[in-house]
Structure formats: structure tokens, C-alpha cells
Length: 396
Image 1 (spheres, rainbow, N blue to C red):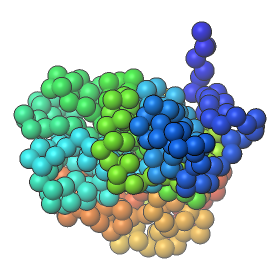
Image 2: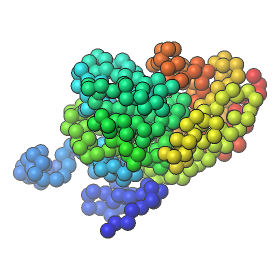
Image 3: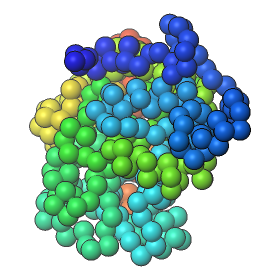
Image 4: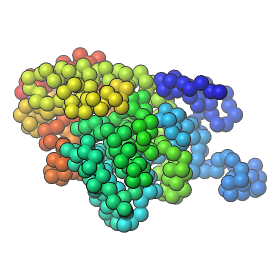
């Protein structure tokens, strides 16, 4: 019997061999749109499913298959589907499981693109979304009340973007299961190395592979990992026909990034803890949101469901938005840019950037203040990032 590997070892080894008969140490990139048939009967068998193999890279590709198998192993899932972006992964789940007249229940604090898809575009297709405000994330009665006979799935992010709210996965999964519904968890902020939602009862996880999985700010990609029943439905109902396939080259880059995922997540987490602690003691900072701080309302839940607390921090500076803009414009080392999970430390203003899709009232319900600043801690020495933040705030 195969001895289970630790996640750290799985990330390096796992399924490193190509599905094709080669002996490469690093799996090759199969950059081809189509595949040759041995003869007409071979091609016909591939199309009718009586033979195994590859036909066309929109439907399957050896390099992409390696990535899907790797993520399934890391998440403890039966299978995974790779997509062209994190938003394509979320759209694949939603459009495969819902039809007009049905609804989904979601925590209100989400990535701005996810919120826009749920809040605006799904309405055009007759699909309703019921958002639960941040104040109710831990309220079983409120979660239950949002579900009715037309609800088809429940969706959360944790830690949530950008507030770092920690949502109790086991609580939400238990309620979803009572109603026969799948819980989908966006695991982008944590990665499979820090959090495994399927082990806590979730049906599936989604990732923006652009972030920590790739880790170097040079690819766009997405992942859905879950039960084989779900992934087969996604392939048949969405990805094969709508075509949001991941390129083999980007799949290869994510596979390369995953080899260092354990080391990077450890460094991101350690540095973020040091920076969060410094911010919490700095006189010009009003509030720091980081699950690793004991002052964080979700600290106890984070300790229970996360291996470490990740590289994302949010904070509010004295003087509000005006002071925050001045501080960000004075930074010399931290990069003013959206996205996260890169080697470089990135800083941005959610209300005017990643979460501009929310109205002021919707941001209030999600707990996103106008002065909130989001920091994605990179791999630099934390003391250098602290020095940069200090010089930018000291001049205010």
C-alpha cells in the first residue's frame, strides 16, 4: 500500500512523471493544440470514450492533467479541474450547478470579481444570490435562514478578501450538509499547505492559481478541486463547451511554483506575523486584521482550521483614507499593485481598487472600510518591509 506523503513532500514529488512514456525529471510542457490518431478507429474510440488518450487540448492535455492530479492530492480531493483563471474556476462551479430560478447563499465578504459575478451578472441569467453580512458569519440561525428550497450551493472565502475575516468552515459545511447542499470554499488566501477545507466538510475548493500556487506573479490560472461527480459535471456542462482551459505552459509554471509552496508559505506566514505585530504596536495604526494575532476575532477558529496564518494583512491608519493614500504613495520597497501571493510585497486600497465593485452600503455590510489597506507580504526580509512602512508613515 502506498504510504501517504506529507503535504510538503507531496508538493515536491507527488505525480512528477508525465502521463506519456518519458523519463524527464521535470515533466515536459506539451504545447500542442491537437493530437495525432494512429488510425480512424483509434480516433473514433477516443471520441466515443471506448479508448483512453488525448484528442484536443481544450478538453485534456498531459501537462494540465499533471497539475490537476497534483492539486487533487494536495487538497485531499478525488479530482480537480484547471481553468484559465480563478474567476473561470468560480464561474465553472456556479454555471454548472445552478439554473434560472435557483439561488446560492454566499458570505458577503468576497474578492471583488467574485462579488461582481454574483451580485450583477448572475441576475441576468435569473440566478439570485443571498449575501450574508459579515456580522452573521458565525450565526447558525442566520445562515440557515438564508437557505430555501431553491438554494443549490453555499459559497465562502476564508480568510476573506480583504478583511481577513475567518469563517468557520466546519460550521458552514454542517449546515449546508443538513440541507443537502455543497459548500464551496475559496482557499486562495490559505493554499492547501495551510488549510484543507474538504477535510472540514466542504464539497469543493476553488483557487486563483495566479496567487500562492504560482507564486511568482507571472501566470493567470484557476483550480476547482472536489468530488469526481462534481468535476465531471463541470467538464461536461461548462469547461469543454465554454472553453476556459488553462494553457499547458501556465500549467507547467504552476507545477513549478508548487514545488516551493511549502517553503514560501512558511516564509510568508512568519514575515506576516512579524509585520502584523509591529503594526499592532505602531502609534499611527488604528487596527490590524491578521488571524495570527490574538486580538483577531477569528483567531481561535483560525488556530483550529489553519496550519499557519498566511501572508495577508489588512490595517487601518490614523487619518483614514487620506493618510492611507499619502502613506502608500511614499513607499519605496512595497509595490503598489493588486493581486497577492507574489515574491514581492504588494499593497493596495480595496475600496477604490479590488473591491470597487461594491457600493458603499455593500462594503459596509462586508466590513470593508474606506480606509482599509491590504498588504500581501512577500519573501523579503520582514525588517526591510517594516522600515519601508515606518518611513512612509513617519513623514505624515
